[in-house]
Image 1 (tube, rainbow, N blue to C red):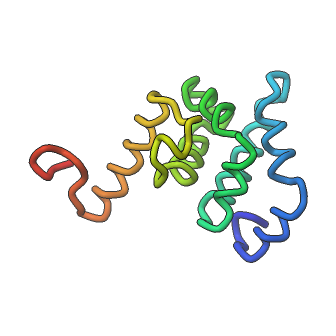
Image 2 (tube, rainbow, N blue to C red):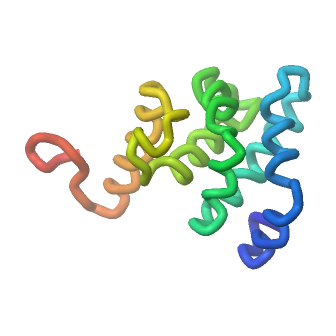
Length: 129
């Protein structure tokens, strides 16, 4: 539902679905495929700007960060990178203290890729990517 119908996000966010997904991700003994599904669910929610604050408010970034830094395909690590980039990429480091320097690298990489695909310059001393 969250992947194909953004109008359903408000309904999903009213329930405790985000909290449950966060709990699933945080527990070390959760089966890999369940973690992957929870990450995929949150990733779908993170594409909608209006849904991002709810994800951020559940303090899931540290758990997602562990998945990113493990580079674990079984846990859907690429989607974890996208979630962090979506919910925190536009915030300053002071606004999202949970994003460590290692995770900032992932966010900057996603931002650079988006700029390259849009044929825009991104950072760099000489206006290059």
